[in-house]
Image (tube, rainbow, N blue to C red; front, side, top):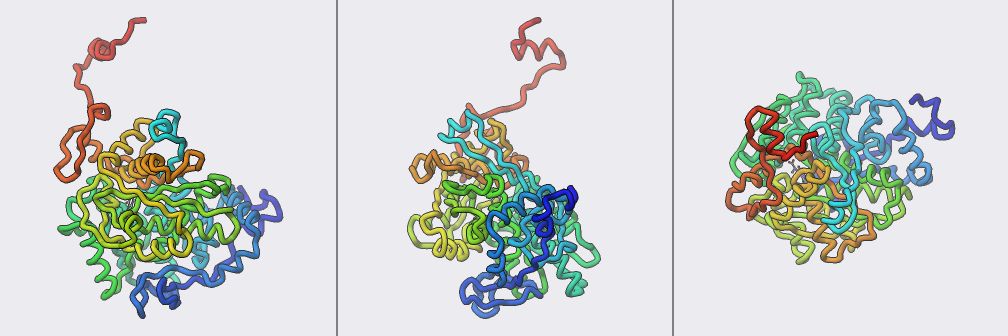
Length: 468
Ligand code: F0G
């Protein structure tokens, strides 16, 4: 819709003019650093950085109700750069001019209500927010849209002639990074991903290969790859595209903004269930809700339920024991979240201390519950990944423990598409999980193709069809 067709008072607010004053800020010593560089840790104290809009308080001059109207009307506007996560530009990354925004179709994923059967299995009705419906089929596209828009902006404004984007990945970050980087000028931009050999699914591996990235496989697990890219980012001129880069977190905050918008900004009694690996996503979601709350766009912060497998549960263990210790991971069907020492843990800790306190809950789950959470959901109209299954199983467990109540509104995060993780479904159906997963497939869930001869009679007989 054209701007002129929308109500006059709101028209002048729909194309964002506010550019804020965004800087990197150290989460420990609060030192600010200009955005004219790629930076991931504080040069002084080595702590993690976040992005801070130093003029954020000015946004409070606009009433929460008006912000809601701005975001809702923007949905109707035909303005390419505002179609995706940048719909929330003033909150999300105001300093990026619209001309530099790269939009590949990310964001605005649906909330899908559980049907009566699934609701009764889980013991309450809930919504799945399916981030598998992003362009590279995971939530990582949100953060990558902001990171690659920033690279695009940096190339134009700083006259960069060489940029090497690099990330370590359990599969999805690399797919998203390679996709978004492939949109930029190949004469300037190179794309490299580091993967733990044999620890990403074939579909995930095919994605960066298809996007033309240099794919480096190394022995070990994600944490080993992460250490290497961290060292590279320390010593060499590369642009790190893991969520250690706070610009990734910036884009991923859109998940929280969208939930609020989809629920008509009613966040009272809201619970958001998030699978946690490197802890970037849960950080972004918590930060996103804080933005909305501090501008009176929502009336309350939600409860955050962080879920992990018992095979990779440093955050859940920290919450239950009060002590944080990195863990050695064991094989997990929630393989994308199979991380023993999450890079963003210090951010989670700080957000919990400063804002979420009792509103940050955790559960850890057996592998059997995670895979069956996925299978059960997908038998009832969903297309969730193993991490989505983990969220649903996490909700079920939290309900049984009484830490989530049936009168609450629950949104579970399915972070990627079912098809990326179909090998785990296959292992379940074929009963051939390698040792270490501790999964014992149950016949009730198993489904296999039936081999019949090529005749309608054979099919009719097999299906016990009644003649007309
Ligand atoms: N779900 C999926 C599908 C993921 O790919 C990841 C992380 C997570 C959940 C956990 O999110 O790390 O922000 O806590 N994948 C990363 C990757 C590590 O490399 O693709 P997190």
